[in-house]
Length: 202
Image 1 (spheres, rainbow, N blue to C red):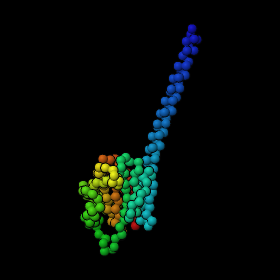
Image 2 (image 1 turned 90 degrees about the vertical axis):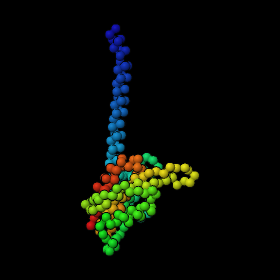
Image 3 (image 1 turned 60 degrees about the vertical axis):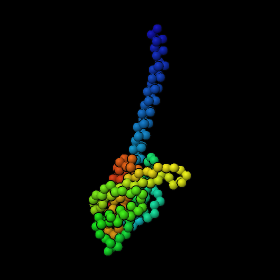
Image 4 (image 1 turned 30 degrees about the vertical axis):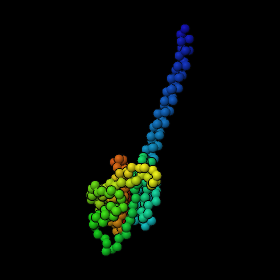
């Protein structure tokens, strides 16, 4: 009787061991997947301007995009929504007679922005630094149409943006970041990481 009882228990033990093995594989796969995602998110691409006056690092998952007049323009294709988070760098060469404190560029720059962007409204202007160089940070909001199709009805998206103006050497650099206002706080760490990586050469 005892041997028969032990024989009947063997299939159940086998099943339990099999289930434990499958669960173990599932847990390992979850951990590996999470680790791979974290690794991918921490990878960065290095950008260096052709004149070697500027370099920075940005997430490798962000893709380059066309942006007339930009030294660098990238966007996060993985972000949700019709408007993807974007980051760009533009450089304006200054004449020797036009070189002045970066604060003096805020008013003409924001007036220009107001003509370019719909419903442009400044939230805050603060002094800051980029790679130890004096800069001005301009926070603002504006609206964009999520589609260019005239046949598709769409609701404007409220976008929150940041422009950082840096007067360095004979250039006025504009570091511009924008994301939907609803997700901007989640994307802000990316902007901080990019700015922390900026290297302005003499």
